[in-house]
Image 1: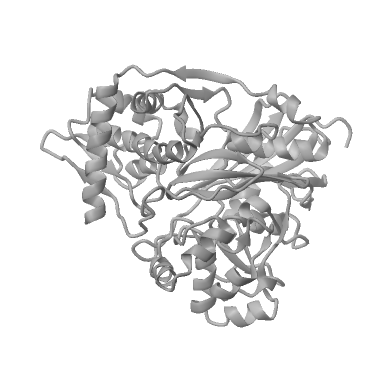
Image 2: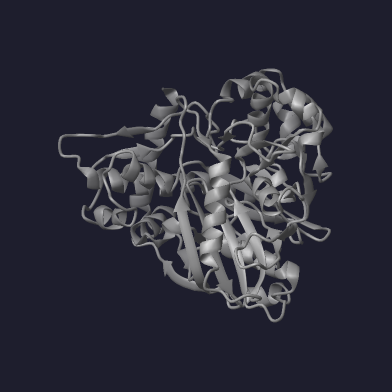
Length: 494
């Protein structure tokens, strides 16, 4: 492959699949995106059709590269929804059950039982995670317990498990590679983040046959080859940390970063803690940020389960808007929500509450409430939840936040960025390329194949579009936040 000019990033998200072609300067050249079906078989349950995800991801990948000449693609990077669980047949490659999505709450009772048995400290110490249905380990246990014949197939080595990254790599390599990277493995409740291996005790508690599990590799390297790009070539696959990873994963040269908040359907705030895992006492998760070679970097993470997805719900569930881009103008059309608060706990509450049984709630409605109030309250809820996480993160770090760097699709919303700055009292910095999750996948793929020479060259590609500075005083932000906390307290009591 002579002088390749481009890297492809496959961005497999909760509601859509995307493929983005980046050039050597980190500029988006081509992109293709398509949504796929969400299934809600029972209250609190969320499923995907893994076969549909594969078909859609393959289609957008091939569509994105149609205008790229042969021989000019260096590698493919993958970023994905990390905790969604897939099981499939080793021989046929067909899914053996619908994929159970990270949002699914069906294992809430299972998690409660494990806690009552005193097992949460075990999982916390070994995996860095809390016992919550969010993670894929209890989803896998549920499938093994409930799907007829699955446990027997798994014990015979005929059934495989993986998060979406493993599923895509299996299909891209036509069944040759059953692998994942260390950051995705660290989100399963089954991976020992200290020993960097599948944890026998955790597997025993969950009843998971180890032969189901993928091989775990560092975050930068060759994961396999595919001939399915659509132009007859054979291309190297590279994976990167899951969809929720912010630029601290892409900034492989950094030692410690202050929090970054990617705002997509789900939002996560991470602080790079360096080469030693730091266990939180306040509801943060300890997770693997990335591994390059033998060097592993860890992060503290706060999880906001429903961020940009609340705007999608206003569009698809209520029909209040025709497109997510309309939300900014509606929010700015009124000066205030007039006491309307929106708690978008559609999938429970994450950091710092970890309440899987919480549900969405809107308060303060009156006859004068219109769709602009609901839309503005939904956007403000993203900012409030982000501050919830950052309050804990600052407490853990013992120092105050000086700025917040953000990325993801929702950061294009200027109202949300300004409100976030006003609520935090610090600048909120938006990058030039808002698709930094996909860009991070492209960057680590490029490093693995020599497309970029190293982290210093990648650092030069980073640029920032705008810094939103606070325009409100402390009295304003503390009053607004206090009202949010009162609303949350009412919800949690319920």
